[in-house]
Length: 409
Image 1 (cartoon, rainbow, N blue to C red):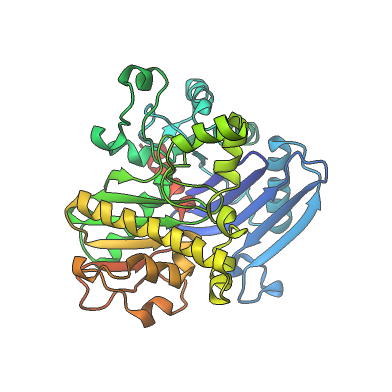
Image 2 (image 1 turned 60 degrees about the horizontal axis):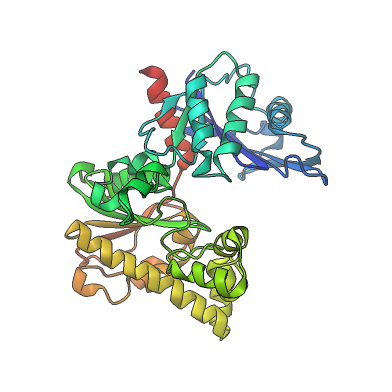
């Protein structure tokens, strides 16, 4: 057996997947949310159709759902174990050989998947000042999982690790060098697990060695980032010291003049918490159009809503600016891949983001772009010098791969 359990622990949620690594097939996945909330939690457990007992089988995945109190992350793992016992597959016959954990921020200390030790946990906690909403929750999940699975290795995969290859010119901010060093101010980048996975899948899809490709990967979800990848190495990425910098996102502003914050503090009395809430939770598409869902923005735009139209235009304007900048940084591009919820499903966003770039060798085929499919596919024209792809990201599988590689040495 070579089953890996992948855990993604949030402040009030726990996502998991059990993956059989010989075939890289997901045996079960689940979500436990509203952990610790007074109104009770919600647990969802999903099996692919071929794991469902034949008497209950259809050609669709089987999902069970229930409402129940979930006190903390330890209790959430208990709920997960109950779901496996009640609905399968059996963890007695599919005992994981290791547990892989997603951790958002590894600073500059962690540049590869790492076996969990007490020192590693201390470092994750120390780096919480750089990711206060994420690292503490990630650590809670690790410690809860260790209680449930004490006899197997636990491995952490950091969102920032893939970007440790950024050159100094890309990760250095032009502020006082001593201040930057003392307070660990630099670009770290995020979504690294997704960018790594998609760039490798893209190389397979175009049938060329990863080492010879110059790629752009656009991870467009509620959080969004673009990474320039040269020969499999991240050389530039849009998120910075935190996931706030860069593209316009669902609720995050992305790039903004820092003096705006000073202005709002001086003139409107905004304190640090107000500014943090504004930029992270009340900005982006939500701030412009009243919704953080791109589907609603597209529907509003189609219906002639001015706010939705402006939100779309601002979103795409920023995307195109980064595509052009990173094209220049790489000195040309071989492959551009769209991924994540928006990137995989919003054809108008893909079309608008690359419209007018034919002189750069980028041309999208309208019918290919608009076709509905869950498969990785080419959406550029046959004559396009740059191959444009839509690739489904699978961060859980990438975490499982890296976990298994560490366990096997």
